[in-house]
Length: 92
Length: 251
Image (cartoon, rainbow over all chains, first blue to last red; front, top):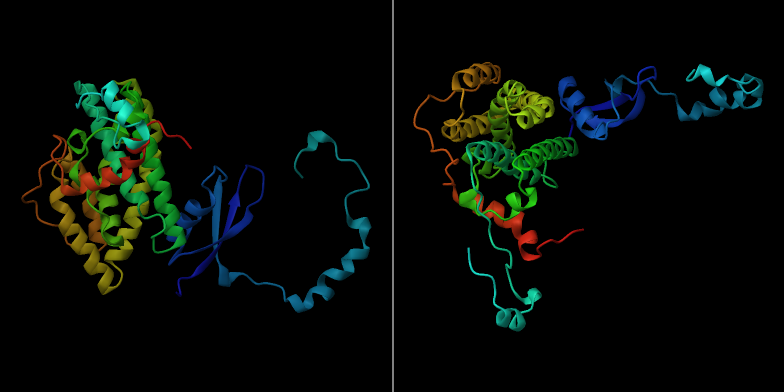
């Protein structure tokens, strides 16, 4: 079947970012949005939906993994763990 | 209603050997209850039909879409049965076919995907118009149910209409099937109450779908008086067999 594939992003709460939830097959954008609604928001998860053609996603090459990601392993000072976040700040 | 088994019969045939121990119920139908039953039976019977697609839908996505719609409709039916003040399970499971007040269009077998979509579209447009006006209904139960149902049904219309346009204006084969379904179903739309408003909502979608609107001609009788097609008995046999065979069963 050559029905196009779409990636689904769901925003669950105001103030949060859209998160990747999965993918659906649909012939066009309108039906992809409905499929996303029917497949990924059945339990009250959603406030907003994005669908993006899967072939529009540019992915990193798994062969580049070491080059791209390994060097950050030794830079623990980049983690925001050296200070305390006050509770009142909430989501950052 | 057949008489209850005598003590002697009960001794000879313990309950697990007595088939169909449940007797059918009849409902005292005031005008209010009749209205509620007509709405509820439409929702329950169509909801059951749509639920039959579970495990058979053409794609996973559409399977869930149908399951969601079926659950919306069965939820509407439950709320409406409860509003009668009677036991919702007894109303669904212990009435015989001639006690059901649904329109005939709800009970017709699903046919192919196009038939299911065309039926869902024709029925949902009428339901959508009804629920949106029923938000102002004098009956507070109906008004409360309408407030929830109108959002559900609005989506059913959108989903069915979007599919209908794609089937009608799709391939020669999908167009043929959609037109056949429309021609077959049209005579079952005779009992739609506000037909002018309904036609006004239906016509533009049919035009976008490049389908020919059937002429207004002979219409099937309504099922509201309890005279149904042969299909309702088969549907109820499947839907009711468990609670009728094992009264009060829970799981």
